Every structure is written in structure tokens, then in C-alpha cells.
Image (tube, rainbow, N blue to C red; front, side, top):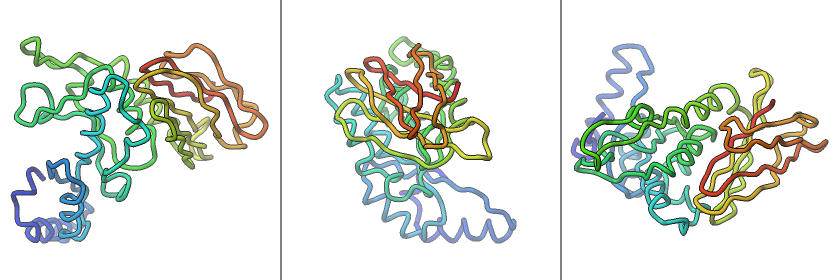
Length: 254
């Protein structure tokens, strides 16, 4: 549902309820309330009785700010003021879309160097329903200043990580101004699932992170190819994971 801030909120609620009742289907619904203001979006969700999801516009702007800050953004604040941090089941997360891309009226472009980090954030964490922008995957054409480079080679490993490994209990390590990480323990329904993700807007380094005692003794590698070293998970389920400057690494079972 486009531009819902211009539609009477009670109508949006009643319309969605009516369509679901008349079709007998869940009819997943996501609404675009384009405003970098969590309180306004929260008010909308409340007015429609949380019967739909919304695009997490504040998270998008956090990504944009991080990409424009030359490594000075505090990465531990990426979730501040976001829909996904408070209402994860109502948040559709995104990095870029047709409105935010260069040359559009709502231009708020996330710089290309940071997009792999941002997509890793929405694709390998447990909260929110992530979306990938066609223009980021396949690129866009136009005048030089309006083109978006194709990131397919960088995004495909992230999508594979989402599909095959991003399952199970999550552990957060969002405790540094540059280098943050999280892990997923995996589950029995998805063979060899579980992962460890690191992203940074500045200096690289390493983090000691827990991936679950059930993964003890395994060898994990970086599915993105950005790191060539492997990580041995110790008997207690911990490993020392590393990444390069201004980069992303996603470790999975070898």
C-alpha cells in the first residue's frame, strides 16, 4: 500500500480487514509510510491495530548516515529509532528502493561501498522481513550520476546465507562503534545451518563470538570470500571471527 500517510488510517485498517475476510487469505500487507520518524510510523501502526507491516524507513536512513559518515558513524546505534527494533513482526527492512535511488524526489541513497554491510544486516538477522532492491542486484542505467552499480556478485552470497544458514537462536555483539557482529546457532531442520556475521564501517579486526555448543569442533569459512582464513569452533561453541576494513564477512560451516 503506497503513501499511506495520505490515506485515512481507519480506512486502511478496515480495507485490509475486509480484503482478508472476503478472500479467506492472510494477504500479507506492507505499507509505505515515508517519514524518518519512528513515532509517526508507530502511531500509524497503532491506528491500524498492527494489522499490516511497514517499511522500516528509519533503518534505511541509519544505513544512509553510516555510508556518508566516512567511518565516523557509531555502528552500535544502527537499530536506534527503528521499527524492527521494537516491532520486528511488523517491519519490512530494506536498504534502497525506487524512491530513494539517485535522481528521485525522495533521494536518500546509501553509498554502494556500504550496501553489502547493510544487506548483511537485514538478511542474516532474525528480525524483520528483508527485501532486496532490483537496482542494487542488477544495476540501473542512466546518466552517470544516476546510475547504480550492479552488486549481484556481492549480494548473492548474502542471499545464500539467508536461505541456507540464517536459522536458530541469535546472539548480538553490537557493542563497538565500528565493528559489530551477531551469530545464529542454526537448527536441526536445516542441515549445517548457523552463521556468524561481522560488519564494519571503518577498521577491521576480530570478535570472539558464541555460535552454540552444538557446533563445537566444526570449521567455518567466510561465504563472501572476503576472508580466506577458517575458524575453528572450540569445545564451548566459541570462535574468533575476523574481517577486513570497511567490509563484511559471514562465516558458515565448511
